Amino acid sequence: MNWKYPLSALAISALLVGCNQSDNANKSTSKETVESKEETMIKDELDREVKIPTNPDRVVVGGILPYFSTWYVATNSTKEIVGMHPNSFNAASHSILKDISPDILKADTSFIKNGEVNIEELMKVNPEVYFEIASDEKSINKLEEAGVPTVALQATADSDDPLEILNRWLTLTGEITGTTDRPEQIIDEGKKYQQEINDKLANVKKEENPKVMILQYHSDKEISVAGSNMHGNRWIKATGGKDVAEDDVQGIKAVNMEQVYKWDPDIIYITNFTETQPKDLFNNTIKGQDWSQLTAVKNKQVFKVPLGIYRWYPPNGDAPLMLKWMAQHNHPELFDYDMTEEIQKYYSKFYNYDVTEDQVKDILNPSSEAAKY
Image 1 (cartoon, rainbow, N blue to C red):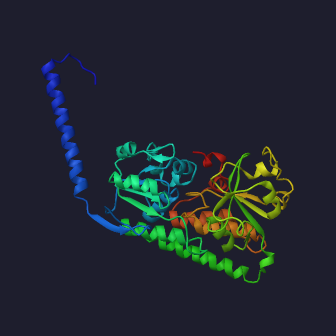
Image 2 (cartoon, rainbow, N blue to C red; image 1 turned 120 degrees about the horizontal axis):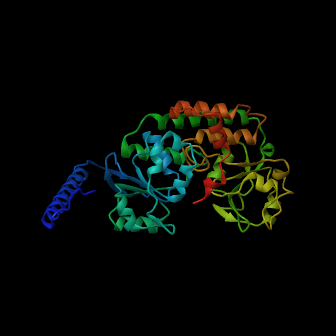
Image 3 (spheres, rainbow, N blue to C red; image 1 turned 135 degrees about the horizontal axis):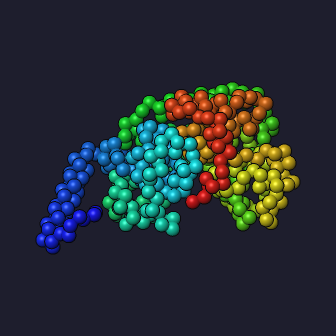
C-alpha cells in the first residue's frame, strides 16, 4: 500500500481494527456458508459410513492416484479439486486433461510430505472431502483423527473386467455429487468395445494368443512386473493375450533377467509409472541388463502405455480406448482400425473436445517426465 501522507498512530490503529473486523466478518460468513451446506451420508469401499457436504466444492485426492480423472468424468469439472498427490499432479500436467479442464493445474500438492499426508498443510487447503486408497490404513486413521471426511476407494477388482473399478468409482461419485449421464455412456461404450473384441477373438485358439509381460517399474536397479490381480492382468485377458507372470507373480514383484528370459514374452507393455521407454530396451542401454535376446525386443513389440486424461493403465475415463489400443497390439491382424481416428471420435463424443493429430501423438507416446514425481 502506498501512503501519500504519513498516518498518525491512532489512525493506523483504527485502520487495523477495521481490517480485523472485516476479516472476522468474512471468516464468519465463510463458516456460516459451510455449516449451512446439506450433507450426504455415503458408504465407502471399506463399508464405512462417511458424512460429507452434498456437492462438495473442495475435494482432495490422496494416494488413490487416478481418482481425479474419475471425478472429471462424472462431473465434467476439475475446479472442485483443490488438492492432489504430487504423482497425480505430474500425470495431470503432462496429460490432455490440462487442456480440456485447466483448473486441474490449480490443485495444491504441498500436503504430501515425504510420501505421507501432512495434516497441518492439508488444513490450509480446507478440504471438504478427501479420497484415499483403502489399503492405506495409516493415512485414513490420521485423516479421521483430524476430522477430515475421508472416502476410501479400493483399487482391486473381484473379476477380470477391466472396467469394474471405474464403474464402482463412478457410481460412488454419482452418489456424492449427482452426475452427468456421461459415466453410464462411457461404461456402455466400454462394454460395446469388449463385446466386439470378444466376437473377433472367438475363433482364436489360446495357444495363438501372444505371451505378454507388463513392466510396472523399471531402472538399472529394478525390474518389477505386474501379475495376477493387477490392472495389467485384466487388460491382457480382455484383449486376447496370455500374461506370462500370472502363475508366478501375485500383484507386483521384483524379478531378475533370468526370469524374464524364461518367460520370453512376445509383447512387453511399459506402464506410465516408470520412466523407461521402448527405445531403452531396443537400444539395450540399461546398465547390467541385456534385453536384446528377447522375442519382444527383437520384433520391436515393446509399447509404452498411453496417457490421455490420465494414464491408461489404471481405471480412467479413457478405459474403452485402452481396450481398443491393446487389442490392436495383441492381434493386429484382427483389429485394423486407425487409433488416431478412434481417439478423436471418442474425445469429441464424450469430452466435447477436438483432439489434434499432434495431441494424439502425445497421448500415444507419453514422455518419461510424466512418470516423475
